[in-house]
Image (tube, rainbow, N blue to C red; front, side, top):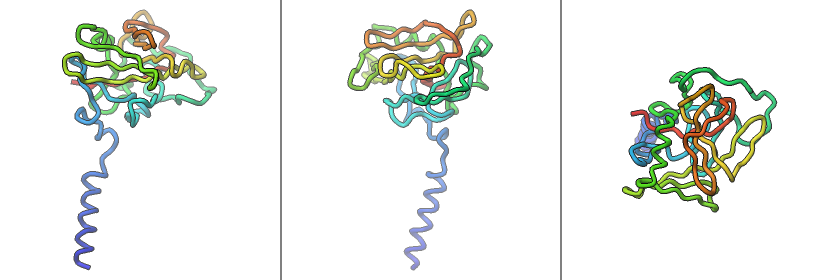
Length: 201
């Protein structure tokens, strides 16, 4: 009986110190980030607010520019907000990324466009794009998760990822296709796009 009580005590202590961590506390760069050309990217898309998707191929949820609310990536909805959020930058209080992470800037998306340091490969079998650091060999996958308005479209063919940057009432974003990817694009802030967080450092 004494041995059983000792084993039970160890289990309880292990749960207290390891199992009691929140999702946000688990989102550390060692386990969830990849360094590509000077920027540490999360390995997977943002799912619910403050929580990463469990696998790189998972689409996660959709977000409107400078808003923290997450929208479904599959179901039809009737209460879609078609208004545009105001502001010159995605604010900290509206940032949906886990603690220590944030929505990337347009400049950070541009680092992926440096063909001397980063390669781009469309992967039909995974329905998305792979960015690889030519110096280190590290890679990061972005799924073609489509976009949302009142309904979801272009899933598996295109991917759209918000930046925190804005211009002339629109938000900057990056898009991926089976041909190439496009940073420096901008569009209506009311669109529902994916978010790929970067480490805030």
